[in-house]
Length: 359
Image 1 (cartoon, rainbow, N blue to C red):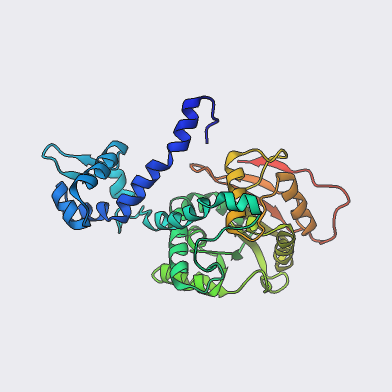
Image 2: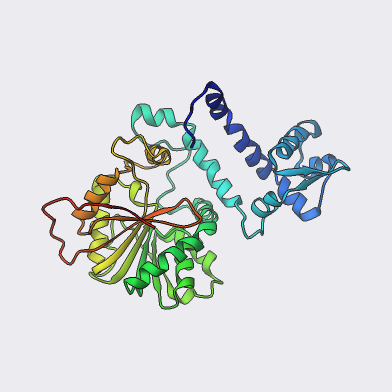
């Protein structure tokens, strides 16, 4: 996010929600799907298909044209643009519809940010807590949304990690909180000798299994229903490597320490841990995305915490790992942290000096 410098910047930020709402509403009404299936449509045709009044629908469609989501042809028909055809129409390889539906739920939480800040606890929409993995509808929306979000970057992540995994001779790996399995699938596609255990709650894994049913390397992905908060990660010294993406900051410091300790126990000495997790600078006011991630943990978890880089290094050291190093994934804005399990779990007497960057 750019730094705000003028009154105009503030006004643009405060009103920026309108653009997202236009996109989400047009998507929810099926506008892009109707046009993609039937070709360019007149206002009356779209009004009939969506059961919306022509006058108000025209306002929404024209806003979509202004935003580059639709084209208005010379014969007054609305057509999809290349971008909306690619990302907003079902069946497209770059479809983001499930991610958009997931963000609807996320928005409900952010609408109650003040409650979270005032009372220092998570905020839930007016429905029961579903993150225990027991509700199929929530699992379906969540896992498919994660798949949409990961699909475009999973390939570059796998290509970036493959040389690292080969360097450490990784053959057996565990993906903790595997979600949709999109990253694991990309990795086994890139590495013919790699096998990965997808460690996730039983409910979400049902949806993951549906996503992977026709995956060519399905035999090298093991679906393992379990709960890292209550169950061991695996047998002692079982894995060559572990992957923990988007999970660590959902736990409080005690939970983070416990989870990293379990992973360390399950890794062979010298085994590799790869993290995708936000972390803050010492002053906790940058980077800006991590400050938003911290607020996301406030409204969406019981007591999650985004650590500082120094705090993350300390957590890793206490769990028996060496210094964490950063690996930037080319063509994306993703940075991964990786480290190795020390031969001895004993604490070092002095703090490890972090290696801040590896390209």
